[in-house]
Length: 205
Image (cartoon, rainbow, N blue to C red; front, side, top):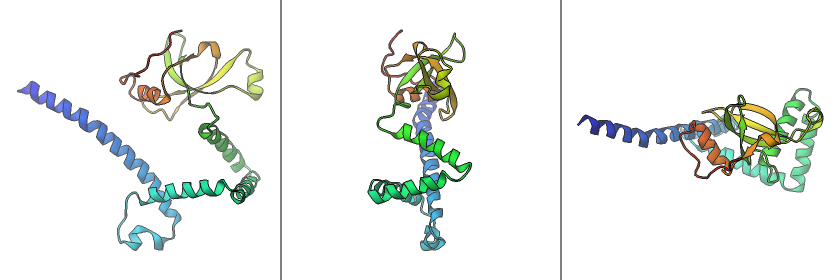
């Protein structure tokens, strides 16, 4: 009887734990997006109009703001307005540094022509006798590149199980092995600490 109970408990955990974690992540994201309601006047807030909060309404507002911003930014008037706004920000000390850095990163990540985070690679880290999965982010440039002799690439090594933090490395291209797996598969492999194996095979050096 006890082995059966143990099997039922394990099976129940295998079903409920992924659902609970997924629900928690979605709740966190929606809760964060709901903060966009703070942009509205107090009289327009759900708890004022309907005497109660409506979860997810802010997420809808956030999507609408992003969509409208994208529509405005694609026409001539919108482009001129954005250029004026960026010129204004570039005149403000400290703000200029933060904004320009974040904009360069976002333009690289979300650009269709960019290669950042679009290739999973295998690198030696943290020493020569160990390996980990990283993501190709580009190539060194400027003064940094002038001090590197040979063909180098830039990679991001994410931490486990939280891949939003990690290490930025510049390595010889010859020491980086490109993997035949998608970025999604690589992220699953990293987040699961190697438990969830990728479905595709890597190319051996």
